[in-house]
Length: 385
Image (tube, rainbow, N blue to C red):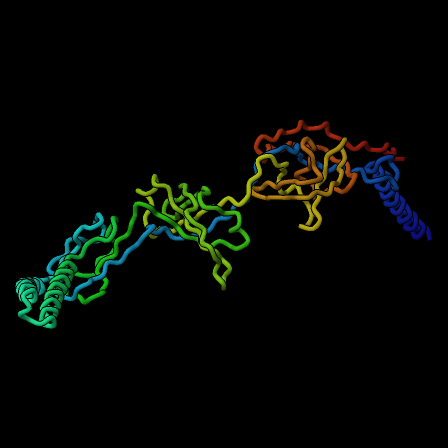
């Protein structure tokens, strides 16, 4: 009986100790809430980073890929059938307009020219004699007209043969560079066969396809920034040479031709892949904020303003967005202190404090001074009994 009583008292003492500890913990917990009561309001202060809204430059652009090409490429075809007596140029040869590129063997034609010249001389002599006889009415008018027609035919034959002999000399139609040579000396060529390609490389262009939604912002003469995969990290300038008058009916894309500045001519080659950046819109006096400061979807955008240690929600209307910045058309004024980092963690009226103000993302934007930290004030901690 006595043993049972001792066991009972031991258990009762253990329960008393456990209950005391639990009571101590429960009494200590109100210290985390303002006023020390369990029903006290949560006093969490959210650390945030802010930025003062300033004016700056914002622009919208698009970058499109194309291939660098000569501004003009002309094929050189044979105009006379025969064997090539010689070929004077190769790929990479610079030529001037009219330079001799190759020669077709024209010895047979030249013999025909000499024969035609003799026939013409005879026809001229006959025509002179006929004119005298016609004046003396020794021959009929029909005989006179026949001899005149023979003279005209002899003249036409000689002119035609001389033209064909001229075709034997294959000349450059434009100044440029030989980019393709398709024949060798001794080859038999036929009329209209392609022999060479000449490119006018003094001017290089790249052609891109622009969306119908963006092409309206482009005009001939506008500046363009160009980069090439072959020269990473380098940028070249150009200008819009022409905007084609119509869009492709299937793709709704409009061809745009960009002329590269001549100072890039020695480094850029036809065939290089080029990326052209077109400026579609620019505003030099826009109210700017970092993009991450603006919350919500495209239909409902808002920011939080830092005011007297609290967050104030503001609905905003946005404009252009580029390079991590966004234009604010309405809702934020220059000089407003906007929460940039931590905005997702606050609500209207939330208590906040500024920590480590950001370096400005917006060129020329000032960094606000850090406000004094707002510390939560703990309620009195009850003493343990």
